[in-house]
Image 1: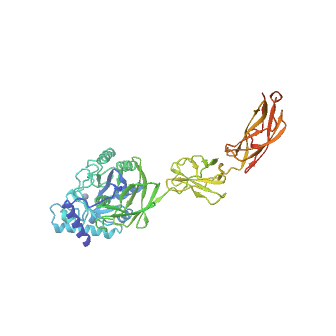
Image 2: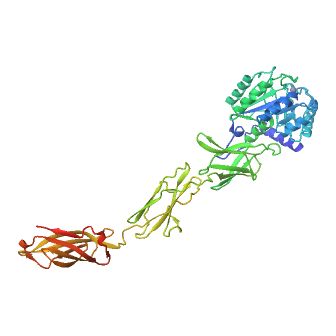
Image 3: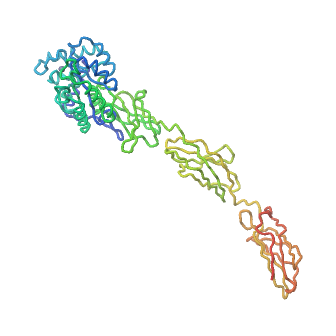
Length: 542
Ligand SMILES: [Zn+2]
């Protein structure tokens, strides 16, 4: 213990010199006042090796997963085996001196014997134990500087809560329980628990005898059971831990530094360090940070090993909360979750316009949906390339980069906030029209007469348009006049697509009683599609 003792003295000096905390916690990280960010800490302590501590208390704590502290008078222990077993279960076996003599007024030399020999005896007999704390017999503390050579904290019995950072770790307050104490009933315990919950501090309870084991100030086991059950029921508020672990936690919490060393989209590496002696201060502190944007959850490792972590929601913010040991190795937060990609979009349709194709599909309903990507190919079933530069956030898309007359094939995918992509939707295709017209047809015919002196000619005014609705020039229109005329004539369309076709013959007005005109053919650069004619024949009557 020699090396440790020197460092403990340095730590004690730093604390005494009131230099304040050395820690730096880089935002957005926070360190929990208590492990798990719980509201208050509670420690069960037991003195004097009373027999029901082994027979009743330890099985009760084990049933509820709680760890307690047992301060043993080493000269009084006749069988170390059950205490060694308890130490290996995670309970703390610590010093109540060798002889239970009053430390106040005892010579330094004799104090050293009480501290050193009890510590050595415990560490020798309990392989899982590292005796680092002491409870003073009759609640009378020894010399603080001497105590600090052997221990990191000492417990008295002054009947008060401890603050989040006690001013002197060798004056840790406790409440005496049982018939001679102030905490006698389960209701008394609940009063103490409520008090420390309000204060946010550290409650240490001191129990000697249980039931009729002959120990000092006996506590009924039924009362202890009720108190343990209350803490279990309210475990979201109370961190129940051993005396040494709470003391370690406080010192580490007040000393730890946290900073990010590397950050990528999917992993954050942290340095979590302190200035304390790592052979003693190797207890995990609780850190948390809001989940990075786009992270649904996170896995946490330290030194390559998985550590306890949870996703918690505080004031509508999702945090990853994790327990790591300062100076215990590199901490890595890795993005996890959302291994389930969103469903492929359904109901995709494509509608062609002139120079555009409009896509529409059903809304995906995943709560973590981020948007959609639209892919296009000119080959059915393959060769897709993404059209949108940023995520499409509505379930529709207009592709204005199409060439008329070309057939395009489309699929859409959904993307969630974790950047996980769905499979392709079903494929649709469309061919925009316009520009490259392929056919022409008769759009309109007006039949009329033209005066020739006292006579009349027949006239048909024919408009030809293409399949985009644009006028077609230089098309030759052939048509037949019947009725008062009987001729087949031709005409050529102008820039407005209009051909004016007159009869060759002219007749007296009185003999022109009806004119019927039908287009029989149209020739030109485009194919004549008579099936697309708006009209093919028209009439005139006086
Ligand atoms: Zn005692």
